[in-house]
Image 1 (spheres, rainbow, N blue to C red):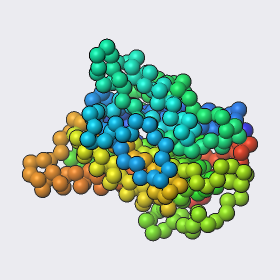
Image 2 (image 1 turned 180 degrees about the horizontal axis):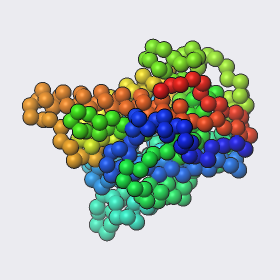
Image 3 (image 1 turned 180 degrees about the vertical axis):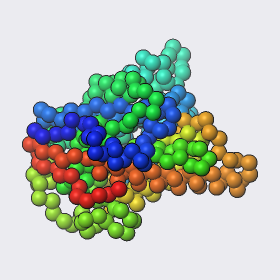
Image 4 (image 1 turned 30 degrees about the vertical axis):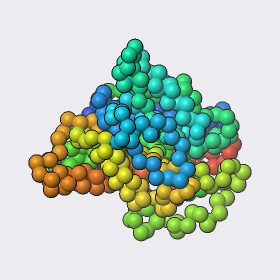
Length: 346
């Protein structure tokens, strides 16, 4: 079976380097674990923020697969996040969060309770079952633990791998016609606030260069037939999802993180056509590591600061998604052929 070794470093990382990476947010680390042989084409990605990071989430897709996202609602008790898990394997893959939770407990990371800690580890999954040829080959708790170990061992500001890695290993786009993958980007505002994003692109739709102009193919992936074995014999086109983690150095409360995650969904809509469909589980997490105060000297200043940050978050998400498409490498498995998307989407 031909499959990516997960690195895809030479071309993709050089080309994408100018737009930054999510690990430009200080203290943030990313770990990938994947398998791409023996019937496998799946993996898991762990985003590990520094202790005390505030987080929330906004789920917009009609077919989400998530774990512990209710705990991130601004009206609940918990305000901090210990790790975010993005996994393949659909609902089965959500068990990877248990392995990450075990690693966090070993490190003493979590919500303090009598006798120990309870790690807050939300997760979301994409559908990639059977894309390597074996429907039962999907990430488990041990793979999640291994990805957490990798994330925890990374150096400050390390390179974030792109393409066929982690949860992007089995990702596809355009009803399974083309390979999707992991992408990342970042931007630094004039105030010094850093905003980064990591995306796992496994979308029903196709990428856009401009909001109204789909690349290469017409924006009709729901209509055009897909002549691949995966599309013909697999579970069908209604199983997709784009997952995103947005991170910032800004000081935000949980409600502001929620609003930033909501605003960041605009970047997903600008990058993919269609998006947020009944057949997608599109989910955006937002993490605020703190350390850089926004201008809140007046109500007008507060609003401008938040709008500026949230607008930039949408822009960075768009770049991360297009980076994931550009960085993906073609794969052939017993389930079918998943080619690289034609053209330059940067």
